[in-house]
Length: 370
Image 1 (spheres, rainbow, N blue to C red):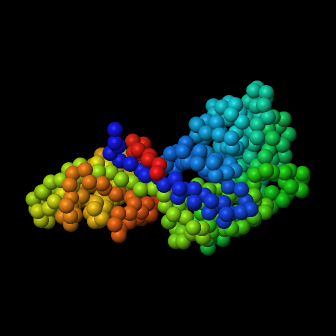
Image 2: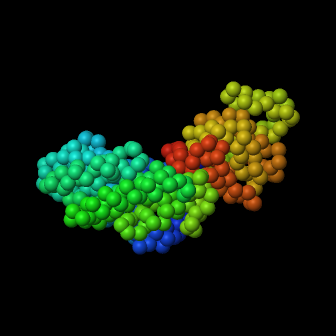
Image 3: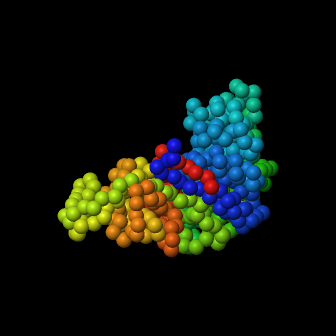
């Protein structure tokens, strides 16, 4: 059965984006961050594609995401932390576990001993994000204690930026310096690391030093799909968007002047109008912020949204659409004729960034790889 709403994903464009990122970040390796179902796009096919292209590592946020990809022949790292009830599975599938502090590492070490395994671990350093990990200036002694645990092999060290989307913010340089001081002290004490990383998508673009020594890996997430934080006007890499969101016209009616449309009667027609209803709403990812001010495309014409967006439907103005008919394709995100509506446009309407908009595309939307 044909789906009402389809997210069309251009696999070739994702591949091109990945190869451009890999080239730009060289000599650093590339970790693909595939958390939240690959930012809502569809993790299984994305992971298979990137593994075929030679991705070096996969990063996820939590254990269920790791379990879904555990069959792949590529290292997987949990980037946040492990809850106590998740540690058993983490040890069982041999992922790279985050080491947030000594107490947390002890829980992982005990479970590894119980399973008769040596688990790989990566030291989580709080260089200024203030979210997770060991505070950089206080971490050294704690790391020495973690090194003594018999069932953990420390293979990595990493941190995360708070403001890498702003290339003029000196705080990122401050975080890099904090991290390097700790790293150099550890190296002087005979530590060695396979994976050293601090920068994700925005930092790859704005701070090229994160792909040079001592760093040997970058984390690529949203930029795999051709997008960036809306604070970044231009990307240094050649990246293009890879998704289009489409639905169908489900109703065409002529309504009289003064007719009220939608919840709260947010829109009243000023004249007799041809009004359409499309088969998509906020449950499919259309932001409520598009109510009474967004657009969709039909037959190459920008059609204004009328009234408040509903869960399953959205009303639009069809007065200027030639030869419109029931079942016509509706482009919510994408290009049709000379016009294009982008995820960035939606993000601006919503007052957010493209990450949230992409992740908010509903689960009932069919992911269609083309």
